[in-house]
Amino acid sequence: MSRVFGDRKTILILLLPTLTIYVMLKVIPVAWSLGLSFFQGNTLRGFEFVGIENFQTFLSDDAALNSVWVSVFFAVVVTAAQVTFGYLLALLYVFVLRKGSAFVRTAVFFPMVLPTVAVSLLFKSLIAVGENQGPVNDAINAFGGESVEFLASTSGTMTIAIVMTLWSSMGFYAVLLYTGLLDIPEEVVESARMDGATGPRLVGYIIIPLSLPILLSSIIFSLNATLKVFDSLLALNNGGPGTTTAPLTLYMYRTAFEYAEYGYGSTIALALTLLCLVFTLVVFRPSSKRVED
Amino acid sequence: MTTAPVAAPSRLSGPRPRPKPMHRRARLMARRLPVWLLVAVLLLVMLYPQFWMIMGSFKTQTEFFANPTWALPEQFNLDNYIDAFTRGNVGINYRNSILVTLPSVALIVLAGLSAGYALEIMIFKGRRQILLFVMGGIMVPGQMILVPLFTVYFQLGITDSLLPMILTYTAMGIPLTTFLMAAYFRAIPREIFEAATVDGCGPLRSFFVIAIPLMKNSMLTIGLIQFFSVFNDLLIALTFTTRPDLATIQVGLLSLSDQYGSTQYGALFAAISINIIVLLIVFVFLNKKIMAGLAAGSVKG
Image (cartoon, rainbow over all chains, first blue to last red; front, top):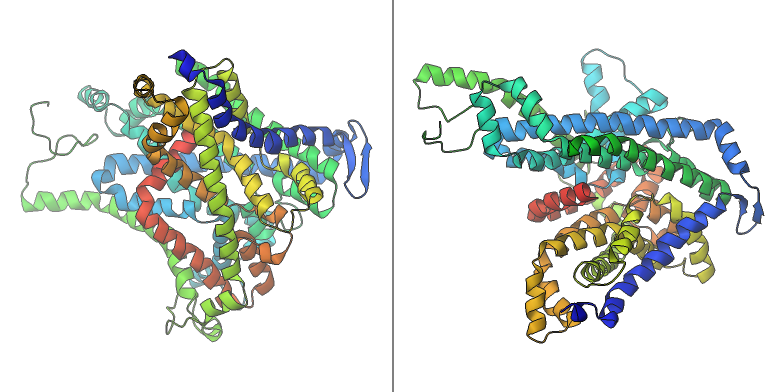
């Protein structure tokens, strides 16, 4: 039996094409990019070995450090908000709406499948000011407020970006956590209720601890996705005003393709990769211990 | 508790209450009122922006300036849609997106399926290590491979086609897909494949006649995850789109918004609405699969 399933030719036929594509188009480019981070220049101008100069530049480059800050701030705030809102929605689906939650679940989930660019342009139109004002500012005017030009300020742009991301992805986290909640055995919840746990106490002592693994998966997934945010901030305000809301991804893209600094661009990409790695480890290490206990 | 005839499993509020006198039922409904209000507000926030945009796509330029933003269009005129297709290149963008997405997704699913089978059903030394090696790719952001790939594609002279996008999406989709396919194969009892061998079916043949039919559902699920990530991608499309006639929908939308700015809302609204409507139709038919698929992809990834 093992001779049949150990057949070399079959293994090669099935595995080799995939491995070849993966190595040629992903592994080698990653190694190449790592190497490029020690060089300066681009293909037209030629490359020059500069050692760790790019890393030194990175640490003294205000725009780069601001990008790190934007990426981290966005990732932490959005992750906290979307996992919290997602969890509240999941609790609503399971305990309040119960069997009737299908329509609400679908309607809240749908924006997840819309392209981020389309969502950004939709929100840009919703908050537009001026001759052709969007409903948001119309509503502010109706309550006697002055029109707000959200995209003129860093904090305004950031606020819209966060609200927009929540709008489009909280339904996804809700469904994710909802399936996690459905996996909790009925008997556990029943017996806790027999012991007198109700409402918030039941949620705090029984439901949350039991859904901890799926909560942590959601947090790791969300951090990884939000650290790579690119489309939405680019389409919303192009990282503006100025470059104050440009995350690392956007800063890397500009450095490499608008200023043709391939070497420095690779250094920024490396910084982004390390950031994703560090965030995952920080969440994963203590959590994997706790789950084992 | 266990003997009570409970119709629907209701976890927080206990067994379903017996029929009550009218005034008690009214009190119960009043207690539920805040929940219904909350749900109504939630639905309004989720649905209104999309509704508003679709309605806006039917408005004329004069209506935009003369009427309040929440007014419905005076009539459903399709000029904006015609404009989006003729001057906004929406048709070409759609064609490009489909020409890029379908081959990419097909290649990703095929590559992941065969690798998953080789790594999970076949037996050889080092298969765990190879699986880990492929999975490592899940963590790496796309920015990391852009510059080298751009250089290579340029030197190969294929930047004037959609090929660079297809190749890049395929490579980027392989790690997660291989990982998920391997997990799905692990869930299939090995005995099925062993029985086939006893009947004289080689491993390559059982891949085609047993594995593929058994994995149909998983292939659809993973195909959907990959469809949305490729179709909605901006980064790769923006980097490898060297000419406007190669632009995908996302790149097209972005340039459309730059081009029209705040002057020509109609065409932009129509272009975005086409996006919303098309995806809505796909979603209505497949929503259970899509929700389950995306959830599976994230928990395991």
